[in-house]
Amino acid sequence: MAEALRIRGVRAGYGATVVLEDIDFGLAERSSLAVLGRNGVGKTTLLATLMGHTSLHAGAIEYRGRPVAHLPVYARARLGIGYVPQAREIFPSLTVEENLVVSTRPGPWTFERIYNLFPRLAERRRHMGNHISGGEQQMLAIARALVGNPTLLLMDEPLEGLAPIIVDGLLAVIARLIREEALTVILVEQSARLALEVTEHALVLSRGRIVHSSASAELLADPDRLASLVVAQ
Ligand SMILES: Nc1ncnc2c1ncn2[C@@H]1O[C@H](COP(=O)(O)OP(=O)(O)OP(=O)(O)O)[C@@H](O)[C@H]1O
Ligand SMILES: [Mg+2]
Image: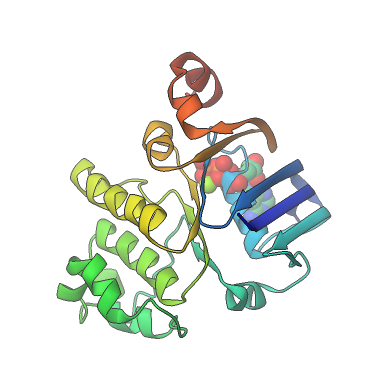
């Protein structure tokens, strides 16, 4: 299958500070990747680098065969890279629906499909962004990325800080996006087992470097290895 993403020799960080080193990986169209690792290892920095929010010191990023490393954020978004940031970044003084309107670009993800995927957001469409629950804000963050009609969806800890029942529902939606839609998905997660259950491939970061790369099922089947790589020490 054609490649969605190819990262070669990436070194990146914030200003002169280097966080990521020697990052190399590829991802086929419509496949999915879990990015795992302990706190502070560079998971968010990796997604931010794909989106163009960090300083790239070396290396190449190709999206659908096209170099994008030197394109600004908006140009990458226009090419089809969607981002669900760890902080959600909902506009607090806009309604749920207005949050979607400002991010809409033409494509198969219509409001109807979004509200079908997240009936809760349909009920809350006239509520302000800061008057909905944490779980609803996370749904909105994902919905807002989807109405931009991406082909590559980057999600940074979408399950973080949510009640177990909300986690179950959101995980089912993420699994559905991975399985059914014409999307390539990168999922950053602290809940390693959950992420491995819904993705095809996995990589683990430690101190800004890739220390493990395999099929998700392989890592899931090796709890000792998984614990040694991702469980907090
Ligand atoms: N804006 C920034 N400026 C400078 N350093 C930063 C910035 N953001 C993060 N860092 C540093 O980069 C390193 C990696 O941080 P990053 O947020 O990518 O980790 P993470 O794996 O996403 O962690 P978490 O699991 O807590 O979300 C950390 O040492 C962090 O202190
Ligand atoms: Mg992070």
